[in-house]
Image (cartoon, rainbow, N blue to C red; front, side, top):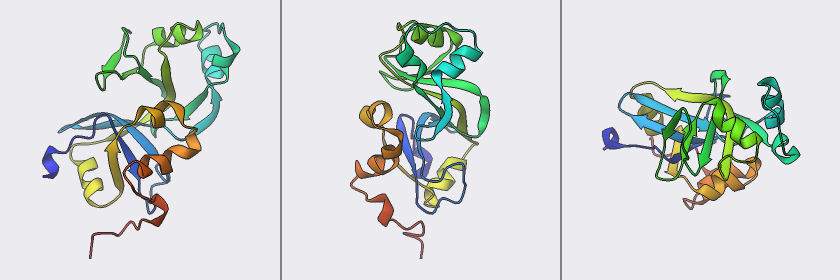
Length: 187
């Protein structure tokens, strides 16, 4: 039953017919989903910014040039000026939301300071902004075939290049996303 659907720690994979340009061909990692709404971070839309750009704006000293080149993603249209870090392991940071047993979403400065010093989490994705849904909105969109959802895979989240994540997230379900129709199942 749709009321019991919970997509926390899942990927939302935009169907090919997604009309909203904010989400065309996106994979969104879902960090929170309850009867009150949902919050996710788009993980396959790199911006022109790097982590070095962000850290410089925040006056955080970078100790490793490799860190400076890490891409920053457009996490969604809500609060695009606010930074979010999806990371593993969870660790102990000032402002974190536990997503799963091993993954958290952190919004506090302390994690960026630790990353800049090479003392942050082993794996992470940095994004500006998030995707949000009000009460019942996401469930309606799933029923309307706007999204596929699948359990999140760490390899896709943390390791694959951004341009491979959309197709790979669908393929883990045995779906060739390019062959799907957005009107499937509604006749």
